[in-house]
Image 1 (cartoon, rainbow, N blue to C red):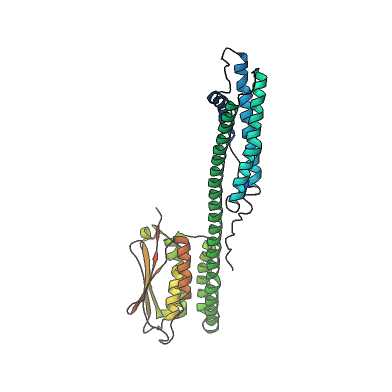
Image 2: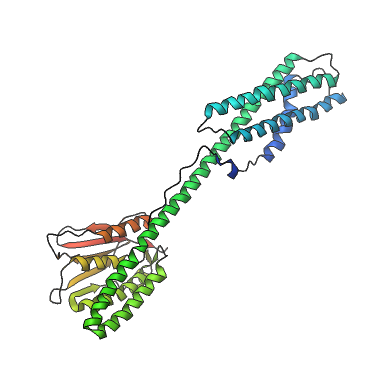
Length: 358
């Protein structure tokens, strides 16, 4: 099974369709603010006093100008996002923003100011005040546009990060499922080979083996989709698996399992992990009723170890350890920590990290 590959984020098509521009509150606050403040700061009202009706009529007029400037620039900003973005076309984007200021914002501001002087009954336009007010509006537009783009880029980055995290999670789940799917066929092929042998040579043991196999495989089916199970359940399953080994090898296998139920209930472990270690020991070591293979499971320091004496079946052939590699990959995906293998000396020990239930 192939793992899905993360899809490259397409910068030619920015993710604007997934981002709602939530700026209603800011517009409701700042459009009137600029419409009131800028005319007073730039002297557009001239000699008009608060006692004059035209003085108060100027505020709705310049708030309208502020509204037209803001909404127009906002419209052009959203439209140009559909064609240009900072990643692929930064120069074009800057040029478009400057053109909007040059051919929309500034002309609109000048025309509205000239209209104001005509409406207010002044002798003629105050071009110094118009230039100062228009320049102030353009500077404010550039600043607000910069804020819009900064927020947009932050949202885009957050969206990309979330998207990649989801893809990575899907990839990990697919890899984990592929590793889990390797467990069932391997376990069943070995079990069915043994069952076939016992049917031919010992039908009574074959019936017992079939019953133990059903109990073991029921556990596999029940927990196949689980990432973690109670260590006590895993040890119980291991007991059924040990029964299979006993029926197959009689006294050739001696297994010591931990029996402290309180301790077993205190930990979690990826399912069907310990069975892999027992299967690996049986596969690669020589044993008999006279020289049984002893496997000891011990729990200490938030880990469980499986230890056995090394008796290579063929000294010239080294084990491939595919089962252990598979188990190590599962552990790294689920626990973010690999297994530990100690093959120094005459004993072979594999240690699996455990996760506390609380």
